[in-house]
Length: 51
Image 1 (cartoon, rainbow, N blue to C red):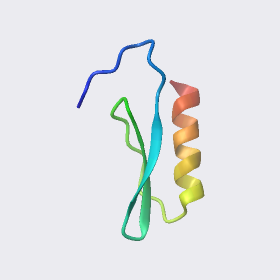
Image 2 (cartoon, rainbow, N blue to C red; image 1 turned 90 degrees about the vertical axis):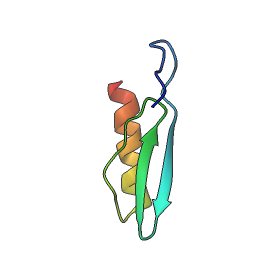
Image 3 (cartoon, one colour; image 1 turned 30 degrees about the horizontal axis):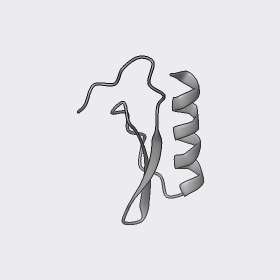
Image 4 (cartoon, rainbow, N blue to C red; image 1 turned 180 degrees about the vertical axis):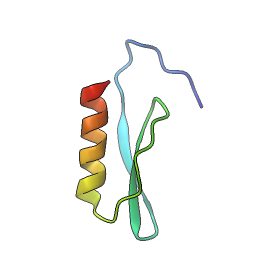
């Protein structure tokens, strides 16, 4: 896992794994597997707002 500088913005993406979608961040954070893409995107938004 690459270390992220404190001043770098968090860059989130969603990754599909079969029937599930997971949110991931450039800082190494990973959200739970979700069946709904919208829930994975909400997880990513929550992560970036908390960071």
